[in-house]
Amino acid sequence: MKPAWRRLTCGGTIAILLGLGTAPVSAKIVQATRTRGPGVGLLIGSGFEIQSDSGQTEYGLPFLVELAITPRLAFTAEPTWLALRPAEGETLRGFDDLETTMNYEFVSERRYRPAVALEAGVQWSTASHEEFGSGGSDVLLGLLVNKEFIPADAGLDLRYTRAGLPSEGLLRDDLQISLAGAWHASPVLDLTGEFLAALPVGPLRGEAPAPGEDGDAGEPGGPETAFEATLGLAQTISRSLQLDQGVTLKSDGSWQAILAWEWDFGAGR
Picture 1 (cartoon, rainbow, N blue to C red):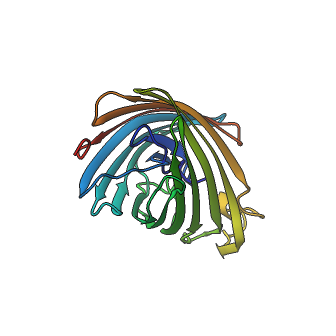
Picture 2 (tube, rainbow, N blue to C red; picture 1 turned 90 degrees about the horizontal axis):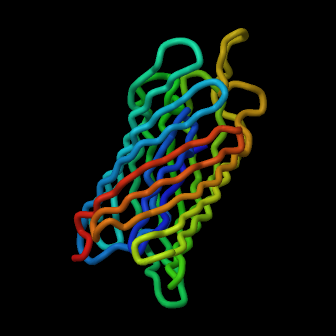
């Protein structure tokens, strides 16, 4: 499944980590609702996440760099460092695929209408190990709809991923649908939640592994529909600094715990 998200809000911004990719761990810092101020701005973030299932434990250090080129146009880069510890064998360490995106808000939020943005990007095949990443460079297209209310904020994120093909293996494209919300419990504390579904779309593409070779991507039928549910907290420490914690439960039986922070250099301008 692909990373968990891209956009909630806590007053102006909420950053949360979610796992949504084809990689063993695909933690991302994501904002389900983004409200930009005037002019350009820079936001950075990082965090720590741990994911576990019956066969292995995975640790991730995701990073976020977002540059608001204009009030409507932003560029984002999201590298992630991973450590994969299987039940047996050596622990693998290195970087996951690098994701870069451009986000353009073409409909501004008004009293009775939401903000609507288009997103386009590439998840580059830069993983340090074949166990990380998908094995090919993926093309991403998305639509984000967000609305701020007085007691709460809500966001809908639709993302289509055109899977880049590895040298061997069968893959399907996928469509991710995310519903996220934040309830303002106090001026400095938000309760956040997200439900995400990743649905395989289109036919299997690629080259099947030779008989007798391993390869999950080459299994008959390809990937199945996957679901994730996340609950968390977002604390506003200052006008620039925000902290986030959360727990994600996944339909494959695994779980993920998240701790993240973000610093907005343009806050309050």
